[in-house]
Image (cartoon, rainbow, N blue to C red; front, side):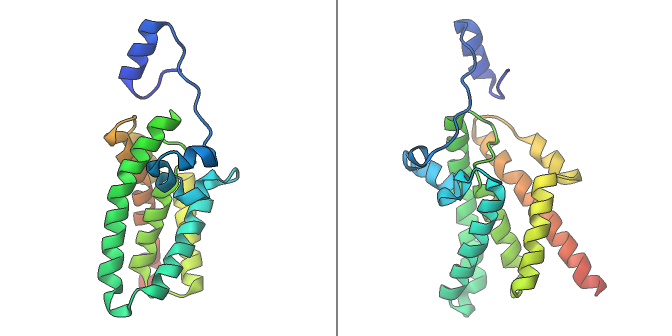
Length: 190
């Protein structure tokens, strides 16, 4: 099976070797590199069942804790800055981890769900538990089912380079946008 990275295929083709099998991440793998620790959502991506959902739940919990410690007068600026910085760090972490796992967009990388769901929670704040639960359900639907624009976004950027790392994040940001669009439409109609 050819990989997404033509340079890897060329080396394998000329060496007569088969493409390496994808590596299932373990705690040892996660702790071997700071990028792995971030990309695997501080361990939430190691879940054997629905790692994307586990990562989104971790993001929700982390956002709740964040709200407890950030002064209300600084919430907008600090949260927006944290999401921006987390996106840039995540881009690097997702790129490195996908390359080391030998899968262009492995399901165990959940940092994309984390930062995208933080974006949703930030933009719908202040919202109570039920509003956040609806946002969670909508986001998980768009991220997992990948309808329309999310499916397109998932197929655009692939590979084991910075472009591929961006692609891991990109479809989740589109899922976040779709989630926010549905919430905005619902708020407008009610």
